Image (tube, rainbow, N blue to C red; front, side, top):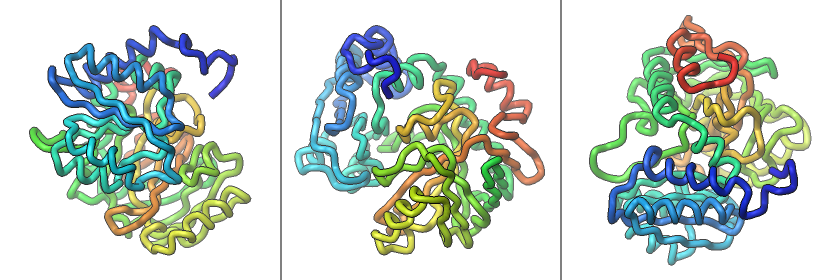
Length: 346
């Protein structure tokens, strides 16, 4: 995102970027000497981030392999054949592609083969410095764990927002592997710090969600200029209203011709102190401090589509206990963790 006109230059944040890349391979996803590391990027990716990560991997004793390929029309598609083959030899996979590989055939093959897939879709130099380099990763993880534990202990979660959201959902006590401790052996996905969630019974989702931050994909959307209102019954989106962006979104979903594209997939909290407002880059927008983010389109139910929408300034109740009010955490344990993270205003 250009603000000063200097951001595209190689020297922009060069020192800070090197530190962030080092933290990526020593704290976020610690590498061991000899690790075979695949780094993928498409032509929409920031090459500075790719280069810095490759250098940090090599300095940590790993063996980096970098692959650039054309940007695919949408996320979750099968990559070019050489990428798929490279995935099968990787122990750690850093994915910077804007059209990300999460939930794709290559992703599933990598996980089954024991690879750790780290989704860093669309990350640029500015984002890497703010969301990794200038954060305390241990505190982010502690916040993620506590939010997950509190949420999973509840029976019902309710969310409202100033823009008009008012929805409830039942908690699935089976839990969500995304937020559980990773397995000692075998492959698993890892997301950027500053996000947590809980497992929902999808068909229990009832009410209205108003996305007023970001919605992406489709590629034509990003930061929303007009709030987008979804009416949800039995977990499925039944009505989409709001304006030209709502029309674009409705037509995009309709084009897949699959009922599971309308099924709510997940609910997440965002709390990365490096993200104060939406930018249009979904990876960081899902982590706007105090937001909630919801996935629409359930891949494990066969949906060929998946999108993520951001609700700003939500209020959240776990049963009768309010943990967040207008985007500010109010639960005492969470407030203490926000202070430990250095979050502004706490």
